[in-house]
Length: 274
Length: 274
Image (cartoon, rainbow over the protein chains, first blue to last red):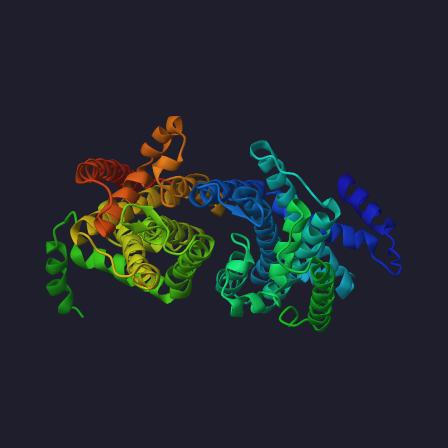
């Protein structure tokens, strides 16, 4: 009885919280929820990608690096390492936001995100930032792990960071689009298997784009994934296949467009609100 | 009613307990297992096919066209059989884990346990459905691979032996892991840190000659290496028959041991019966 009274007293003391232009507390809460969600299962979300990437590096270096093959003026393994890093980062950013939204939808706890006083842009920002955090964290871990085995030098650190940040943001936003659109796990698996993985595999992670037939080289120059991988690699080895300036500008533009789409979808509650 | 009941009862009691009843096994194997993976053909058949094709495309572009890897085989012809049989093992393993974990989580497993199925029928019903999924995908992938490699078949029986033994072995491992997993975490732990490394570090993509000499034993001790070299011998004729015989026999032995373990666990109702 005594305890109940205490609780009652506490409840009556709660006053409405005034929210200004930005619900900073709400934003932070949703963001930390997103981060804790993947850190909770870090063996799957951090360790597994790191191990897989290192295995890929070993396997491809052994399979393709023979005969002192060089690509773009550097050893094959030096060429491959940034590409693989970028591939892992983007896949994890995509996986984080898409699975977060889809699981919330399937389990029905999306209402817990929709009900609080969060503006659509705050909701979008918190979830996207969660995906970016996972992508960058995985990328950083892979980078450190690779440093143990390889003499990695970074030619243009700022470019590398710029491309990493933009790429993670792009894939986080794409993941949100996927998560909002999908209604079953099958849908998102299909998007991952048939769109995201092929794009990240075929856009120059493993080979110089010059090796493609001429028609495909032209196609590659319209592919944001290509600029993403190429630009990030430029940050490491200082050599790019495409025009790095275009890449520096193209990715933020793509991100702004994607952001507007995601924001619009969340505002109207497309497949989120009944 | 009063008349029919006495007539029916003796017939029902007549059925003697058998170790394997074809109808029961068929129901679990076909109606539950095969129909299920055919229903999700996009993930169970098309997905693996697309990702294998991606690997082949990447290798085609990253390697010099028609480069000879070992005597008489181009790199693509060398890689293709290994890739197929690795995917076969992975699918068999994943399929049976998915079935068991989903059935356990959704509580459907009690329906299966209530039915008059002996432990052996349970084990084979789940296991053989996974084997069927693996083999179906492998045949499809093999057929699609002919785009890259041209038709190849050295000995159908050797290839079939290794494919079926491998699928069975990994299905049985999958049964054990599936029974043990309460959550997806445990499954993905084994998938990411055991099955994938075994498959990638097995000589699918490179010959042992490219490995430093004092590390070769590590690859030779990998069962996946035996599976892959045996299957490759059956498909391309590369390798020698003594090694294939030796590897095949050992695999059969391991499969038998794992099968007995699976049977024991099913009989005990490990984590599935209260």
